[in-house]
Image 1 (tube, one colour):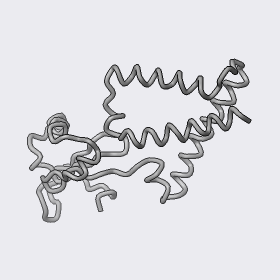
Image 2 (cartoon, rainbow, N blue to C red; image 1 turned 180 degrees about the vertical axis):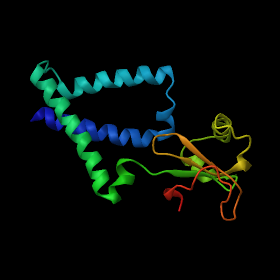
Image 3 (tube, helix red, strand yellow; image 1 turned 120 degrees about the vertical axis):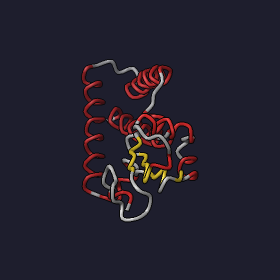
Amino acid sequence: MDLVLRATFVFFLILVVTRAIGRRELSSMEPFDLILLVVIGDLVQQGVTQSDQSITGATTVIVTLALLTVATAYLSYRFRRLRPVLEGQPIVLVADGEPIERNMRAQRITRDELEAEARLAQIGSLREIRFAVLETNGRISFFSGESGGSGGGADQEQSPALT
């Protein structure tokens, strides 16, 4: 039972830490970040299992983490109000060609980074963007087309999260 409690605590600790770090940082990991992730994994394993090196202990921890992962996915699916807590929400970074500085600051995204992402999406200027949305997975979706109006000529349809 001690292993289950430890695994549950670590699961929720990791959930909180990943929310605090921010989705943008998690989507663009550098080599140092990857090494740090491996080290954290080793520290988590030591903290959860302590000196229990048995197959039973490892199985208990793996099953507990798997069940918690499935449970949070189910809760997110079943209860709409829990989704922002468990998965986060898409965040609009650009509206009608104008960057939303408050949202960019909150997500620690610079204008240069946003412009670089737009160039990778074959968009030359932020003014060409109807909406830019930071998705829950850390990627930025761009919706281009005419600013304002009925949205005619847009390359992609508007996401329900933008309404």
